[in-house]
Amino acid sequence: IIVNSLSGHFISESLKLLAPYGHFLELGKRDVYANSKLSLLSLRPGITFHVIDAVTLYNYYPEKVRTLLEYISDMCHQENFELLMPFKIFEPSQIQDAFATYTKATHIGKFVVRVCQSDQPLQLHNSHTRQQQQQQGLFV
Image (cartoon, rainbow, N blue to C red):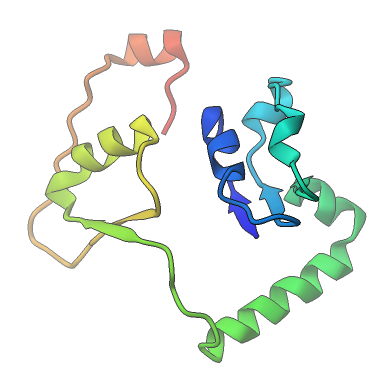
């Protein structure tokens, strides 16, 4: 089973990793709404491809989603899950490096920014003027 949120060619690359009769769960919406193409060859021997839209799922089946989330929460509290995905920890001073790496979409895993109580304020440098932000629709 692959749970995916990557877009573009990463979808077909991820599909190559599935065993025969594997399941691919797509959480991303970018390629769906862009009507991106997917080779049917990617769905070789019995591969199933599911697009999961959590909002629509909740709108149609709120009780089932609520029950599932409660079950997952209980499992987490009982520590029945083991973290398998890689993650990289960044210090606050490395936040620009973290975002630069993230926007390249070449990483696997999660990014964590370690935030501790400190007398040092977080220094952020904005490379866009407010006018550029408004014109380009830049939001964080």
